[in-house]
Image 1: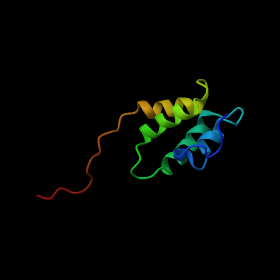
Image 2: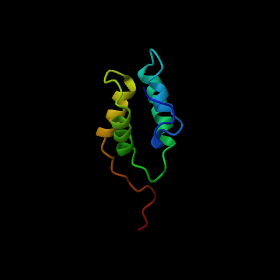
Image 3: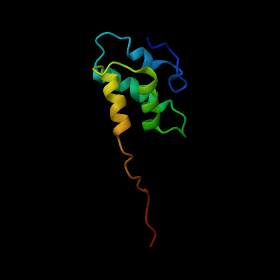
Length: 88
């Protein structure tokens, strides 16, 4: 059983709560996941944090939140581009 707020990376317990909702859709999970990711400390790595939660919670493989967390772990950071004007 996953307890709310049981992990420091999920202090609000929103990831844990998503596993308790019967019939939750991938769209609902995506919204919850983004809320969780935006709430992470700026210095936190989202992929590492997702991997830590997967290991700590040992969630069911067939749950949509598990799929999203796995995608986050597998995602590679896109190269950041500088935006702005070039000066000649």
